[in-house]
Length: 237
Ligand SMILES: [Zn+2]
Image 1 (cartoon, rainbow, N blue to C red):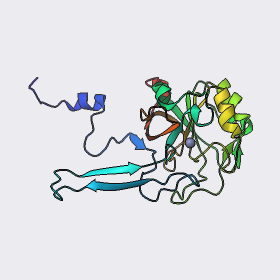
Image 2: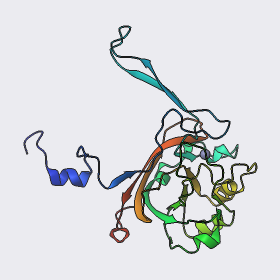
Image 3: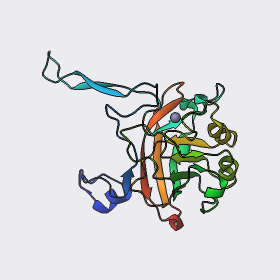
Image 4: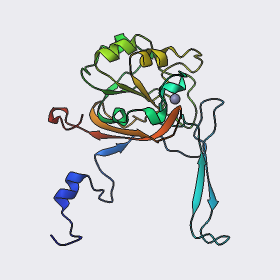
């Protein structure tokens, strides 16, 4: 093969970007932009240029951003709600990449075993729950479709290790004791918050939502994406 020659079949198999974006890879991340609403009282996200190409002798554009670890689409490390819990750099990356299922639970104010029981997700390690309850993301939601504590043992009994929600929390905004966070933690289920599932049909996918290697941190923004999977193919784990 000539050096630099391209083999479209091989490129497709390896997922080489084609320039139009990978058609089967759907971004489910909230854009990080000035004005993205923080958790009430938490650090506001900001991005600003610190150096402009051509100005003051600068040869590059450089920017900086400031963010809470819980900005937009993010994962919670157990240390967020437990002083002895794992921090972001201690988390197993394998949790955040692999086979996942999206289910839709709409119209419920909270989600527990009775709502989850309606869905089949036996052996699914990563479950994303679409509610459609927060679509106006320029404003922080007034109420959260939260998880009741009986969701945790039920999810664990089905093999779920990562629970994804569109909401900024798995507990109500006003909650001080965070019962769902703790119940999920007690059942070894990790938490992904703020995913954008507006355009996502329920079904089987491959999830990619890797946290940054933030030393000692309590959470991390992620770039989350889903790739549609034919579950029977068994290609994703
Ligand atoms: Zn969080």
